Image 1: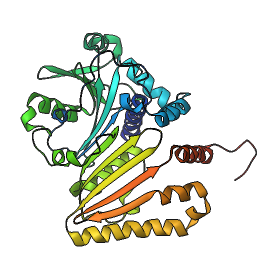
Image 2: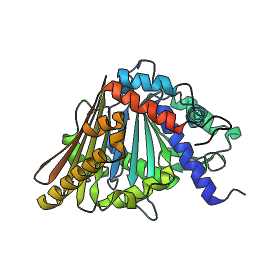
Image 3: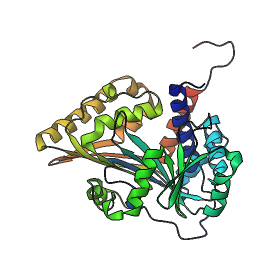
Image 4: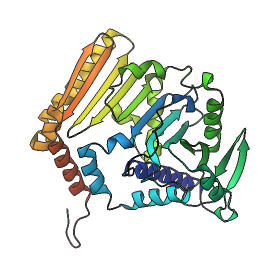
Length: 341
């Protein structure tokens, strides 16, 4: 019998690999109109949403270069693509976008992934209903939730074919809330909730964006640490004064990132901006200063403030992004046999 902790770990890794496979796909042009981002798929209690438009990402030369490097594989990426294909999803053709959402709850809360695209639901349903798939199925309203609990590599992950443009992945109870929100859009995140008020602060050109209700930041970072396998809030310091955050990332030949933080008071906003500038100052004086490329990264970051808001800006040349990627790859490479570090 597989221990529950191992099963949960496998589930998280499988979900993350599937998401990576979606980001690395989408090489062929869409044959039908692409679905827009629709927050009505999410319950109003969601406090974090991130979205990647994989179709627009592939228009970026910087992303295409990254994708070429990654297309050779990697065990997790290969597993993720295989996992999606077993569900009847071709990550190269079917997926247009990827949404990740977090809802607070008991223990670490709930993570849900929503794949947006154009899906052949009858074909997928036939595969999921096949007895050889060994999947348990539970009806919920007009939908069916398929549990993948009997697959050791996946654990307690479930899947639901929401409609022809959306497939949801997550735990069964979380998927029920997704379906309830879809059935009653007025009670969804699109109809109410705090996050939709943050949308105007996003950059229109961004292919990747995120919205966060800062009141739940400490719980979210703890849950993200468990999802990724280790991050803790202690390394991030006190973030209790942040009440909201939006992130916009735009890739073309270069990389541009915009982080907009909302604080509870102007005094706390000034303190936060001063603290961030202090971190950058220490980075310039520390070990980063000995590495030219990393020094360039630090110098490309700007921190500004306006009332209760703090703005962090990053504008990085594409050639520097590639150098940093190459440097990280060299650090992660295993040493030759017989050598020591």
